Length: 224
Image 1: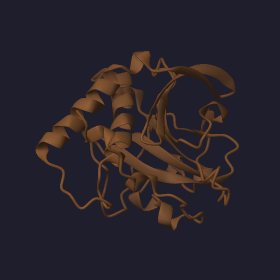
Image 2 (image 1 turned 60 degrees about the vertical axis):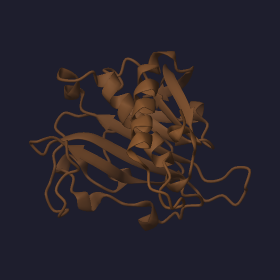
Image 3 (image 1 turned 45 degrees about the vertical axis):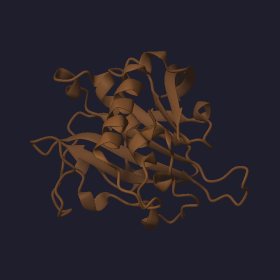
């Protein structure tokens, strides 16, 4: 899979893929990321959500990313394993030292990170259970927390082909996920196709970031 045309001009189609977002979100929301297959068809879409700015240090800005996946992935891979590992990889990788630690990551540490990701993914059936709202119905949700972020998915993934990553300040049980009829609220038109130019980064968002969670350092992925 690839990240799509780098020029930003090529249109990528999502086919019959269902895309999920969050209802009644107060703050900014936009297209964060997508992947395509060898035929340039979209197989994965991530939508980003950030709450309104908050000056209360006890309740800082909240962030949630929702990733939707083409169920056709399940024809050649274990869909649940793929979806969960994708989200776990994003969370663990984000905690690996980058900008704030001037020390290169050696191959042994990289292997430790990959092994950790595999172990966490394999244990997904034992993750704590909670309930979240999906299209107005409360459904069971498995959650795993790490480095100030929480990954969640709703089994069976074939019925709910999405996963989410939420900041620790977000009450997961308060989230109301929904299958989107339109992506207008996210400032792009999914039915017309998506270009890389439709992606918006946090620093381009009208709501400024209070904390850069993707650059925080955490020791856990390098342990063991």
